[in-house]
Length: 197
Length: 406
Image (cartoon, rainbow over all chains, first blue to last red; front, side, top):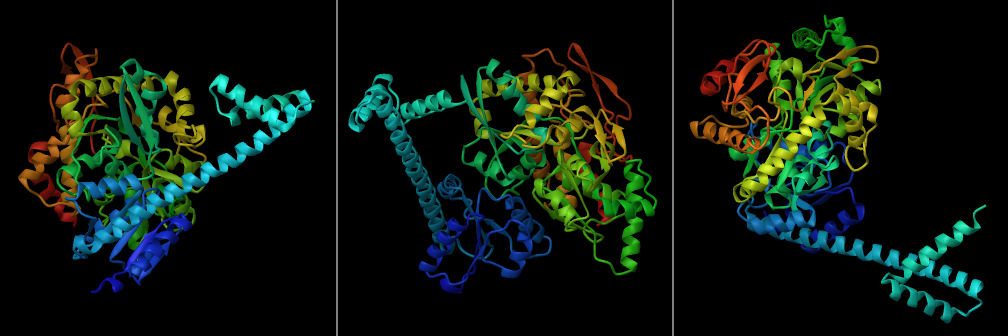
């Protein structure tokens, strides 16, 4: 079996992340890649796809079901699956840290599967980083909006210009050792309270 | 303050761990207990293996499975404490319940009566070429799986041939029942009461009826952590025993239910959590039972990790083809439960502790006083519903005596 006809199943409810993993696998030359998003009916999907490797995110409630399929299959003499490589503690740590797990169908050597897990780990980490950055950007944008509101409040109340209003916010933030956005938020909250009828 | 990280699954029987944090017992013992809610038992195991958790809420058979090499990830786990006795039940869909009533079930919750009706029904379905009934459990190495199989087998139903047992996450059980994907399940609370409350399921029998005073969840501890931090582990155990005593007091049940209902814990309505704690359980939408033994957090040595419990699980792993029998495995299984550590920790408290590490399960037909240092301790009754005994010194004989059903 060459790399390209190894069948890989990606189980992930997060559609964007699943797409990133799928793209990574295809770039690496894996042609048979299946993605399952929904959590119901996983067992049926696995029987249909009959994958050699399964990549699943750790937030998925189906991991116990997945492991039970391999465990039960022991009695019907089907190949046993296992976590990537029992002896490779650092791989396990990296996988759990990244929030991903992988299972292989017995008979495959770890050398053939390790690239899949390594790719999944790095893409999971990249996705987490991207989500974090996106959140930070959102927070920053929200902060900027609230600062604009606070500036407007100060300009009106104190009859000062925009630069002076910003300097006042910045000075207060520095004196109180807080973020400008926090000071601005306090001011906006106070203003809302004052205007409540 | 010592930082201790603990994983848990959102179930009513995580009560002791959650109460230890919420009611300040951990803090009093100088411990900052950080609870992490997990979505699968596999995650709990893996995160303990890589050192994210020092301790965790675990299915009692998990340390046994890890000790005999059934775990897909290498991890050494000790169970130095049990997190209570009982706590799960067998629930049937309302449709299956009606069929059972037509075949002799009498609302008694008696496992024998319910099992007989199920056996008759399965026979009739087979004659008409109807598909197998399907029952759900949450994990292959769980009390739910072994309790369910024990019950079925003792009623003459072969769980491998006469019906199908599938694994599903606990929170999926209710929906799967409604959609007809499964006909019944054995799972911990609140997932039995949840189906009764929704009008979609009926509790057929309880774990306390299948096997009185039987184990369910344990405190799983990373062996590495247990060996390097004995003093801290003793404090952890004492704080959890204090929490267990608090959880056992009926005056605290309403407060405990409202704590467990919180969004960071079970995230379920108080009404579906309280019944397992109080023992006032609605088994159908018109029948209420009083079952004070449904879930025991402290009484009758509920926190003591009996080696006979570990060995019973091992016997069932062999019985159902999950493990092979060997004398070495018997030793490994027994050693995964650590009554000596519990005894060492409990010496700091005024609580009675059994002097023995094992007991013959099923030998106590009534609550019996046993010597436990200067205190008296009541144990049992601890019988299986079919009257069979499990002698932990004769595991091989026990397995042989059960092999007829396979």
